[in-house]
Length: 328
Image 1 (cartoon, rainbow, N blue to C red):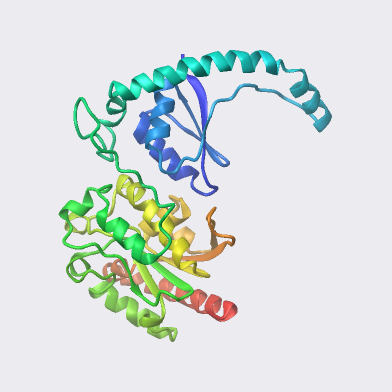
Image 2: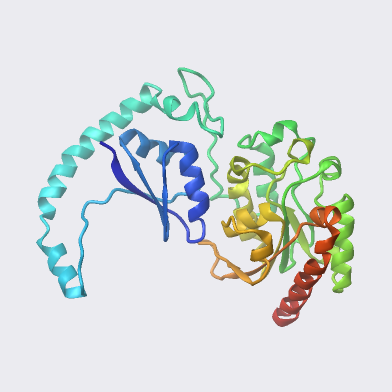
């Protein structure tokens, strides 16, 4: 029988965590505030601990109760036989630790990872290497760029010519985030240098902003084949890079261009046409502030669908107002 598990995450990332857990466990998930409910046995619990990038803790409920007030809640919790639970769990933990140790020694990890989307499984009988997306020690843009260049976590790197990292003023308080490099960007190694980039430059100039004064990056640093949209797997694989990127730049204002950027940063599958109607706040557990975020259409989309340029202009005016209000 499978146990009920609750995987916690930073607020706002619940939907992305649910997608990640579906890929890891191939089972149903229920999104809740601050995390996602799943069902699984011991094996699944270890799978989550090993492979999740969005999840923070895997919790197993030990007591369910209903109370109408704080006093009733206190009485119920106090009356629970905690000593019996602790003794039972102590023996269980000793047994589980032994199982976990044998699991790793006998390459049980490979059974978990060989079918995962991140392609961490390397050898059928032995795990030779598991790349950890450990960005704790990354503090500067130079370190982040080196980390990304050395990373093999995303298969797009194999087909791309260059890693497209950033462009613009690293001290800017306005950060523009696009989707992924195109053909021209893949050759130049910089974001927004093709036709979409030229349109972006004109759009910025229309509200008296010079491209050189702002900071630009993408969700995905490598070009997807044939300029296709990045998959959910690829977004998840590159999301830790983007989160760290935002933390290092520490902007006061984020301008998201396109559905991929909105999905990654806001953890939302709502359409651009609806997201752009209001201001959003980006939260990070490593930043002591909430960042005002505006969503708009990607310039490449506007080139294909010029009828939406009027709406994009409205978004630019909102951007201009926020810049003036925050004195960026």
